[in-house]
Image (cartoon, rainbow, N blue to C red; front, side):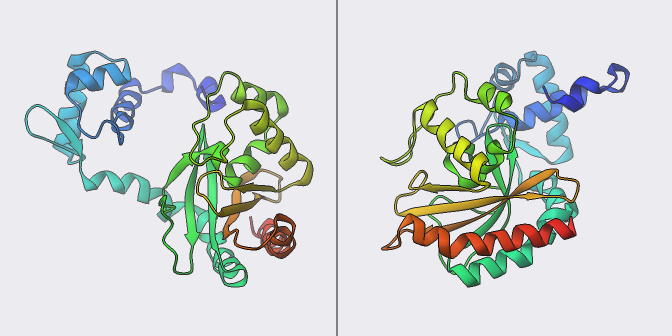
Length: 257
């Protein structure tokens, strides 16, 4: 449970809102259509309550139904786009992402950490559609992205230890790290050097390099990363070429945020 939740006075807690959001989050790629019974199992609430929440969401236009199953409608995107429309940082980083893409010839992203995943909330590319869909709002496991590693590295070591404890890593390529100690090692290197570099973890023949983005108060608000083809460029050559560009953006944003 987040620290903010622990500090919230129970008199201010709206349990119905929490349960309604849990119903929305119960829909996924593996569960695009839910019955009230399935929704209840996935959220831990009763079937009767799940049905009432689903019917309310249907009345509001956020889900549709054939009488048995329920599924999300495009209106649900309003909730996510409200973030994009109102968040200051993704708008501030956009010009820097454009410059990074032009200078380095790759796709640049701004991502934030959300529990076990990084979420890409701003991006700029130069004509290459990534096969794994780094579109706005895309989410991937934090250990597979250079942005995820550098954001984990900004957390206290004891928090990283808790995050790693008992975790299972799913390989996406033959090069993906599946051992906890390997992931711990790349996080420690990112903490030491202030940047992260990952190669062929999510997609073969691609490398990602990321730096954290902080406010003037020192609060980490996300990470800027660039995805580059490996080609004939060595790891050191890629760092020599890309890291100064990313550092320049990092330092410029420090004065803006």
